[in-house]
Amino acid sequence: MRTNGITDTNIGWFEFAICRGKLDLFFPKVAERPERRVKREAEATKLCRQCPVSAECREYGRNNHEYGVWGGETEIQRHEAGFDLPAIIGVRKRETLKKSL
Ligand code: SF4
Image (tube, rainbow, N blue to C red; front, side, top):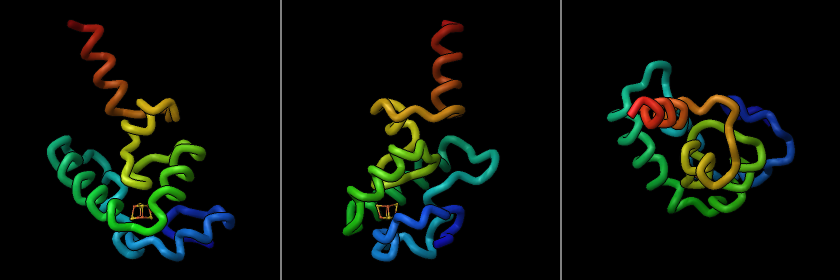
């Protein structure tokens, strides 16, 4: 299976995803502005709340340390829940700002 970067063959639940064809909403574009990101993620998570495979999707995003919105959870929320990402830009920026204060 290949769906916009998703190559794992063990994610049959994605057949029931209501975001199919709308994946640009779930991943940031290069140099996305913070205001645009907040709006995009709000739209994406709104869609996730209506999705029948939200739990499976969230678990996949957590276990595979994915970027973007998975199962109604942003990468920052996943990071804060203990499912770290190797280079999460928003968290790095906030931690740098905290140290400079
Ligand atoms: S929970 Fe959200 S990201 Fe996951 S498949 Fe459903 S709509 Fe897509």
